[in-house]
Amino acid sequence: MRIFLAGATGAIGVRLVPLLVEAGHVVAGMTRSREKAPQLQALGAEPVVCNVFDADAVAEAVAAFGPDAVVDQLTDLPDALDDLDLHASRSDRMRSEGSRNLVAAAKAAGAGRFVAQSIAWRPQGRGSIIDRLERQVLEIGGVIARYGRLYGPDTYYEHELPPHPRIHVDTAARATTPLIHAPSGIVTLADPH
Image (cartoon, rainbow, N blue to C red):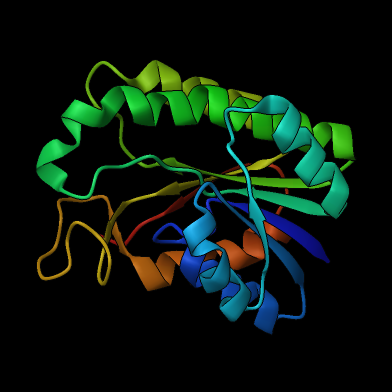
């Protein structure tokens, strides 16, 4: 299967690329950073450098790859957890405009499957953005992966556990792979309480 993975250098994306390649898929890994392209190539993906807010560029990149499936792992998060609230508008824009561009590109390219990351909790005052993202993915027959708060290497919680819902970042990546073949719907990926 040909899989276009947007957000391929994020915490889950960077783990998902080698899992997909190992499973025999041909993967295009999209990043907005030209400096991260060699990392994606080393993981076995075809690097695609593209700004998700440029709808025409996204449509062109997705169409050129010709994917069977598109996976949305787009995020725009700060380096420090304490800065999360200050960057809320950037994260909301990624979930709204960025994901909308990716959904439109996937539809135009005829990708039969779509998986999008979401979260298993609702930040105060920002739930409507997440609900809209989920609705647009479900409307095209896609799958929503609602992740708990990530912990483990390269997350905000490297050495302690976050509040529930939560999931180890490696477990989250492994659980995402089969969602490419799952029926449309919402799947919550979190540790049991």
